[in-house]
Length: 504
Image 1: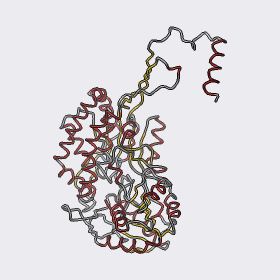
Image 2: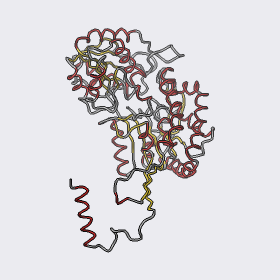
Image 3: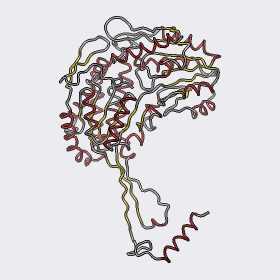
Image 4: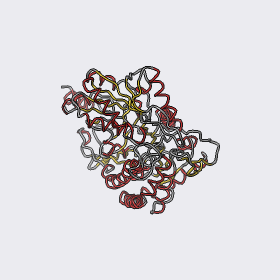
């Protein structure tokens, strides 16, 4: 997922926020210095003990209060997201507002269950009379560095489990899309969050680097290159990090698939938010017997899509390209494919006029020599490749360093389940795409260059905690057989015991 800083000047004291669909400047935020970030972290560190002390119930009440405000102010929140991101109102409503509101309730309800003390069953006879408790305690101050494509889902959405675990949080949004995050963070104070518990660090790359150097844990979503640098720095500091990185998600359509369903899902999840989703369908492998019909139906669907500056609900299907450098990458991938023999059936060009738009584009005669099939595009492209059979489709799908999501379409569910287990990915969808992200009980994570750690479920909140194991000895002997002084007789007894217990 790209987190380009565009042309932000790291020395400037403010950063202008642009509407990518119109080119208009819609706001200005502070470009915070490293010293200012250190101050935010100090305030967060001072606030953390009291925040932890109010317990799950107290934190849950405040998160629910924030959710009530969030829903009441949804029109203004959606306006901000649409204006700074260039996405449609539908995408802002369903993938940002719905997800975050759902997450607020989910973590307020489930945090205590996921982080409850545990008493593991002890297998060793040497542990008779001893009680073990494992607790999960907050790490302290968590930094959330978020990208521009889903400014609320990938910032507030990641802050919520960290907060419910008892951490304080500093969110560093992309300097391209900071306004909606800023609005929500300010509201947290208005609904009763204590000062210092949830803060925002606005600024360019240097602001994010300062945050990595000061907090106790980093949650990052963005490009693989940036994620590597952050993970390396966290390693130097010996602090944990969770990084969701790039993707090049394959979709496999077998000859027995429901073609209409497969086409609709492919068009939706290759082009939703102009393809600017880490788990977008970025490459399609279609079995030869249905290839021509599939391609024809895709072109038919794409030809009806409306692209332009987002207006009221129902007015536009495809919005703008949020980041200017991303538009260059999309254009380069199309040009590279054409130069190597691909054909453009639909689109293929930047749209003239104000704002940043790239036409929804269908490419055929593609192969793995082309960047559009091997590098993350993050744009409205559907490259479709004909394959002779399912084995070749699986081989090509796995021919990537990435491993975020993957899809298989087939009416033979048993076969699809078997093939799904052969895919190297953190997530596989059968006759669907993307939707497991809404199953917050299940982990969402990547394989390979798509990241470390994961969101959602038990894993998604325990990553914000240390484990603390407490052992209590009850009714013990004053002098146990294993204690000093060493004795040949006792040691020989334990030697025979080892042979008896483990030697067969």
